[in-house]
Amino acid sequence: MNTVLGKSIMAVAVLVSTLSLSQTTKTNTNQSSTDSRENFKIGLKAGANLSNIYDEQNQDYVAEKKFGFFGGAFLSIPVSKYFGFQPEVIYSQKGFKATGDFLGVGYQFTKTTTYLDIPLLLQVKPSEYITLVGGPQFSYLLETKNEFNGSTNTVQEDAINSENYKKNIFGFAVGIDFNIDNFIITTRGGWDITKSDSNGNSTNPRYKNQVFQLGIGYTF
Image (cartoon, rainbow, N blue to C red; front, side, top):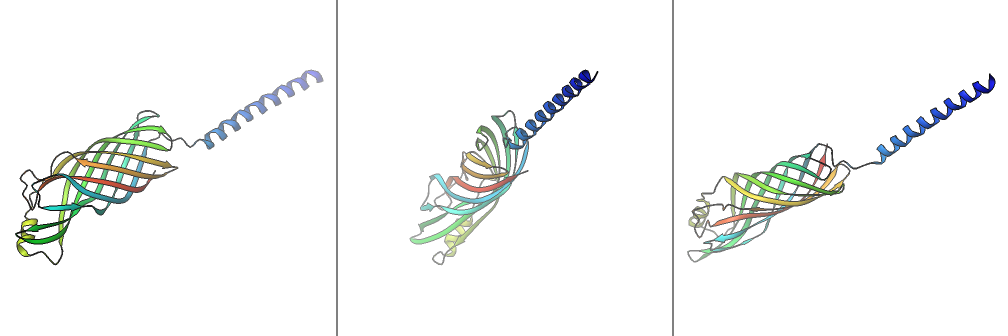
């Protein structure tokens, strides 16, 4: 009887020990795993733009790069461990600096065009630390502001300010995000496909925006 009872107690002890070890191993594995590529996320990000224009037509000035601000929100929607979608809504300051000549008089000005960018990006996630993104982008023009230096005159300023820019612009964006826990270092390059003004002239030429972004973000 004592032998049977002893064997039973031994069996129960072994079973309990086995279950406890299994549970401990599972818990440690879950705690040590940081791969969240299959998780749905909401994120915020902000940073700096470096913008300019390209594919200009009928221009009388030389365009140079300018800095601006961007900030907004995004969703990370997984399809699988390696693929997903990332729609974004971004407030973005673009534009350029320009020097030129109008009616024989030189001038300088800085144009800031503020857009609401809505990129619809495909995610490729080769690693838990790296996300590649790319896709189409819709941009809506919120505001245009021109800042002139002292060398411009009223005729030049009126000509530059007489803008007729498109409100709705289509383009594309590509980039790389580096993921560190809930933090993100985000990089983007964006280029317009449609021109800013279909009826451009030498002072307000037709052109396309291009912008490079560097920022930080946080996901929830």
